[in-house]
Image 1 (cartoon, helix red, strand yellow):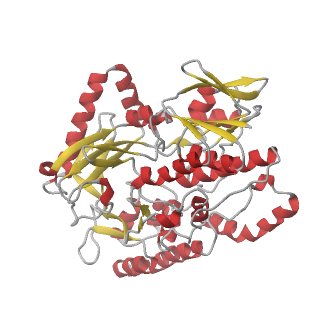
Image 2 (cartoon, rainbow, N blue to C red):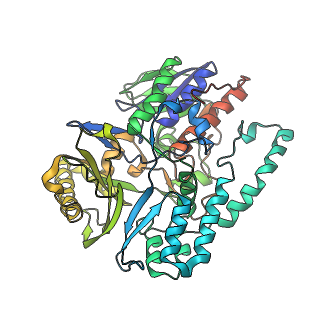
Image 3 (cartoon, rainbow, N blue to C red):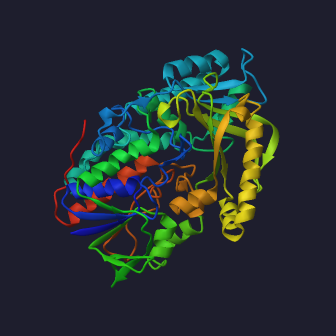
Length: 510
């Protein structure tokens, strides 16, 4: 049985691996020159610049995703870095009782609790509850170690799910807590401001913070040396070793449908490649409204398209620099207030800066040097995308002007930065859009709503269409690599069930 897969990101490669293991013939079609999708990096003058990959959920056996990654990657062969501090946030208005204006988000829960209590004993109740919540998370399987997609299980096997009811009740109790609502419970002004700034001033569900921290405490969210390309290359090589085929520089124009059943794909060159099943691991908007011409939709899908149900995740303006120095006196991830507001050409106003120093990964730069990246998130990606399409010269001028403003402001924190810069690379929302085709240059698919555990409105199948499945980081709000591999594995199981093939896996290094 032949299966066409659109997109060689983590989801597409993972689906290809699972299907090859189970005897299907797959080909992946990738419009770009390399694999990885949003999980990628690129080289300039001896430096490797990351797209934003900072940690992997499931880097250790404390998290069930380790088992999933081990089905496709020899995890024991990968060296992970586990940071003692996830990030440091310089608070503008207040200081702690020691006169320090930098908040340290420690990854060890004992250390974090001791630190929080030392500066805000008056908030003992809220702090103790926060730490207790994360310790409670550690007692659950997140995600549950479920051998099959729930929809595929007979009723008598679904009964076993009752053991996960305590997890459901637990998550239901905390699902609506945000960093803002938690901050309102605090009396200490320094801590209150720090928690409001956890997501660079945006209000987000606390689960986005507490769940990774819970597993960071157990060394379950490490950064793989070699970065995103090094990690994803393992999956790509595994896929090829299993007999899978990848066609790079191959752009899909649309999905061929006959009598409401996907029968193959048509490339922009006009070439038609038939298949028994088509899987899209590409952008959700492209898949539903371009490749399938918006013919297989319902009310929920149209609400998603209008961004009524969910908002598209931010895009990024990112300045990456290869510098002659390591800045070991600075934290690897720092957010700090600017001395003066920064206004982007897309009219977004920023009062803070986020700096990421990659000096913990020696593979990204020559010895004695490192990569420094500064990211600014924007909801106005269309400005950059449209400007590049309509006036390339103006686009180039604007991104150069804005990047120089950013570097000048960064110099105030990273003294001597300008003189040490050897190469500068600028990625705008138009860059992310051009290389990944992600709608509005999104770097994570959908932005999570306040109720982060609500059932995702994005389904793997479209109404009225047979022989087609959708997978990838758009499948669940928040996206990311865990969503990519889980959605790919689930669909592979569904296909095996339909085709009466016993779903098999093999695990490397697990």
